[in-house]
Image (cartoon, rainbow, N blue to C red; front, side):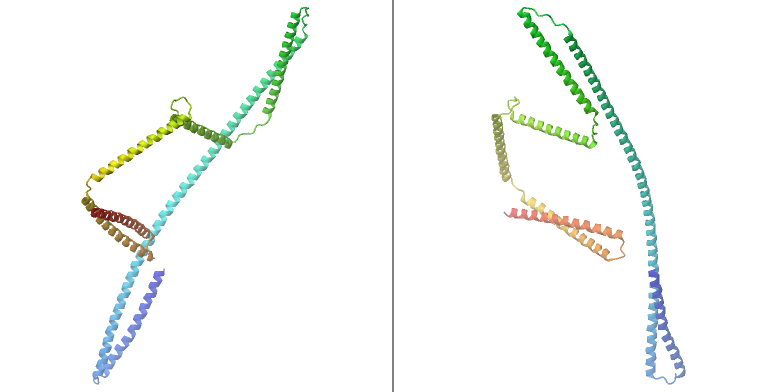
Length: 394
């Protein structure tokens, strides 16, 4: 709309200018022709000069009008071309917008389907977890009931056994006691037997009493509501057990390694003498290895000194590398400058598309990295070449 309004405004301005330039010229032509008819005989040289100048001006005006018409035609053609390009861009944008909306719609649809599937899975998972928890609680209750029944049975058996023992003890008391003899031996034997019987009876009574008290305490403890263990506690206990096992395993491995290192006689014990002997032997081995390595390195250095060094070959190779690095650095710098100039021009031009700007920016960053890498390679090659030349001079 802005382009069309601008085009109409410029077209009106050109038409107005054309009218203003044409009107004085036609009036001058009519006046000059009539004047020529009336006073053709009385013309002098000065009048002819004026007429010639006026005719020259008329030609210049005609040329200007022609140029103005050509400019208007060019302007119309350029405006038409720009409008065509703008229409093509608008159609392209509409097509991209439509395809993007379609893709977004498909993605939203997939997102909704995934959300529904996630909700179904979460619901099924919660139901499964609730069922597992219910089965676990039922199993715990069944085990507690079974344990309580077993404790009750044991308690009843203990009570029954205690009652039987008490009945037996009563029957034993009601039995007639054997008559005392006059002999000293029988008297001592009977008294010892009675003491043993009394001691056994007291022991049985104490044992029955202890069992009754234990059964009573156990029944009271089972009748109390037991607090349920949470999964977090189980996980904490499992984690602590795993950590404890891991610590035990590491300690066992450390102990085995210690025994393997210091237990020379393999009796399962490490003494101070064994430790000192092992440490001394290891220090001796390290000193021997150090001496051997120093002798080997010294010998290799002497061999390297005796060998002739190909100085010229290394110098030529390093010089070729340096020249090649210079060329690569120059090429990378040129490409970097070109990419930077194109990117700066694109940033300054408002009509540049975003896609082109991103492409130029990526090209600029890539050439910048290449230029930096080439510069580092050049520095390293130059340093190596100069070091080789200095070494060759020595």
